[in-house]
Length: 142
Image: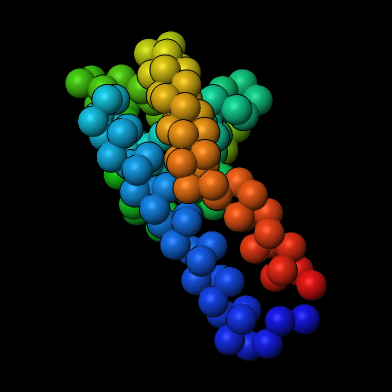
């Protein structure tokens, strides 16, 4: 088991890799698709769900935003100028608000997903992070 300082150093290394790659993904997504990384995650979670829709509360938990921030994000993505999501109320429980991905949102997600995958492979390869992360995680778990 690594000592306290080694654990902290390992954790800081993992955190640095995570932040660096998140920054790169954010930059590429904003530049090419005019969506943030959080917005990309929203599209991913909704697209991957059954019926291509999620209750706002479920989406909030997955994305890690507050209720109001999630609501604002979904509103922005559902605006006529974007058209990636649409909201609707549950017919059985009027308090339940759902968001559904539109055809346009699905197309945007698929295009962005290809780019995200490419960036991840490039960044992981560029830093030699795949192997490095595996080693760091192995050390942390000892």
